[in-house]
Amino acid sequence: MKAAQTVKVSEAAKRAHDQACAAGEQAYSDPASGYRVMTADYLLSQKVCCDSGCRHCPFGAPV
Image 1: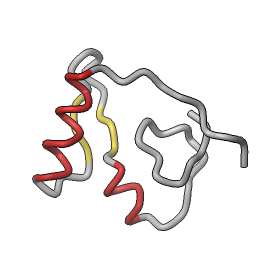
Image 2: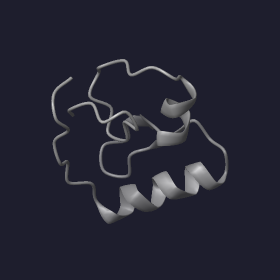
Image 3: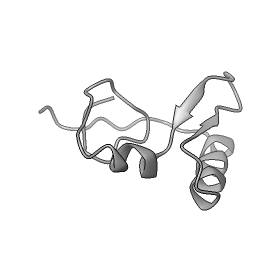
Image 4: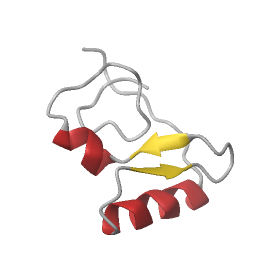
């Protein structure tokens, strides 16, 4: 697995992610794009990295 890259995440996206995690939701809508983004909690529950470059990958995969 490659070393993780740093991705710039907006403050609004960070808030949306934190709110989704606190509510136990699997994903949130990105405030800028409207795309659905999976939370780190949900990704961790999958127990395996999908190597798709997920924004909140808890497994350290490159994004």
